[in-house]
Length: 381
Image (tube, rainbow, N blue to C red; front, side, top):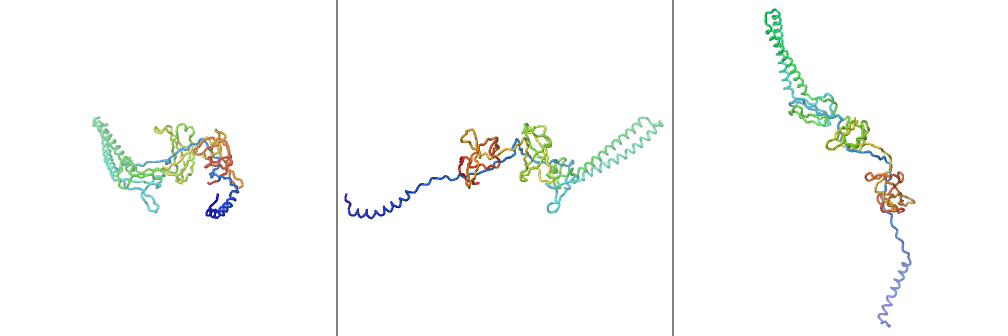
C-alpha cells in the first residue's frame, strides 16, 4: 500500500520519539520486583509477677471513735457560759468541732438563779422545822416527866410523842430537799468525763435548753474502731484478737494495723450481716471520725504467677489450651514466642497461672491476638 507524502513525513518525524521511549522502558522491564515485607506488629507488654494470692476478702469499713459520748444537762435553763479554746490565731473561741477537752473541764454552765433560790428555800424550811423539832422534843421530855409523876394521862404523852415524830420526819424531808437542790445546782455545770475531741456542739450562749437535750458530742480519737459487716459464712474466719490490716484511701492508701475487738452476736435484721469491730491505735489523731477504709480478712495465702488476662489467647493447635506470647529480642529485632500456660483462676482483669513462664518474663498484652509464633513485633509502650 502506497502512503501519501504527507503521511510519510509524519511517520518519519514520530519515529525517533517512539524509539526513544522504547529504549527508555527497556531497563525498567529488566529490573526484578521486590517482595512485600509486612512491618512489625505494634504491641504492648507486661511482666509476669509472683504475688500472694488467696481467699482473703476485703470489706468497706467506717471509722468511729473508740468511745463516743453525747453530753446533756440533767436540768433545764438558760446557757450562761460556754468554755473556750485557743484558735489558730491564738485568740480564744467558743468550743467547736475539733477542739480538745480534758477530764473534768467545764464545757458549759447554766444560769444558777433558780437552783440557788430553791436551795435557799429548802435551807430556810429546814431551819424552821429544826426549831419546831427542838420545841417538840422539850415538850415530849416534859410530858414524859409528868407522866412518870402520874400528873398527866398516857394520851397526853402519846400526843407529845406523835408531834415529836412528825417534826423529825419534816426535818428529814427538808434535808432531802436541800440535797436535791444542791445536786441541781451542780448539774447546772457540764464537765468533760474524759480526754476527748469535740465532735459536735448543739448549744449557744443565752439559749434555753430542756433537761436531757443534747449539748455536746465528745469522742476519744486516740483509739478508733473500723466497723464493717460480714455474712454468716465468713464468721468462721473472724476471731477476737485477730490482726486485720485496714487501708485508708484518704491518707494515700496507708495501711494501719488493727485487732478484732468485738463480733456482734446477732445479725442486723435488715442487711443480715454481723458487725465486726477492729480497734486501731491513733496516737497522732490522723484517723478521723467518719473516714472510709477497707479491712481485709486474710485466709490461706500462697504465691502465684499473675498476669493481665489480655495476654492469654487460645492455642491454635489445641482448642482446649491457652498460651501467651513472650517478647524475645535478638540482634536488635523483637519477635513473639509462643509459650503454653495453664490457667488457675481469674481475678478481675488478671489471671493466676498453675504453670507457665517464670516471674519477670515479658508477655505481650495488647496485640496478642494479632501475632503468631516468630512474628516480628515493635513495643510501643
